[in-house]
Length: 113
Image (cartoon, rainbow, N blue to C red; front, side):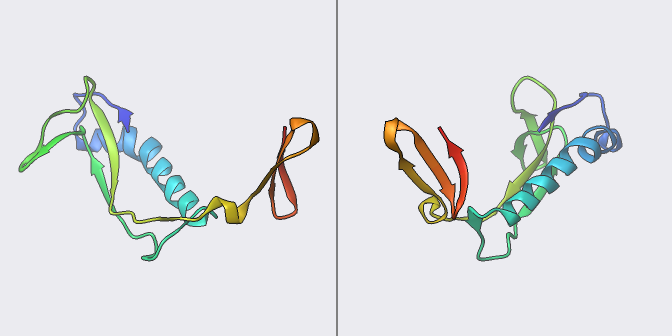
């Protein structure tokens, strides 16, 4: 979601908010989810993406009012079903002597504190 100029028409919104800001963020989010070790999907990460110009409360004919006090553009993701993988299977965590902690992934030390 990003703040936008309330006077922009659809073409201006795509040129100024969707293409340079929202679309790249959406693509990075979906790519990160697909390659994450912490989630899986039974349906190949299928979802519905909505470009919401002048994001507002939805009614039958579009937006009936703003959500919040500002004019906002947003990409809304619906129906993205993910399975969270139990992190205990991926990471090892233990307290070492002297009260220090150790977080590992396989044989790789991630954090020693």
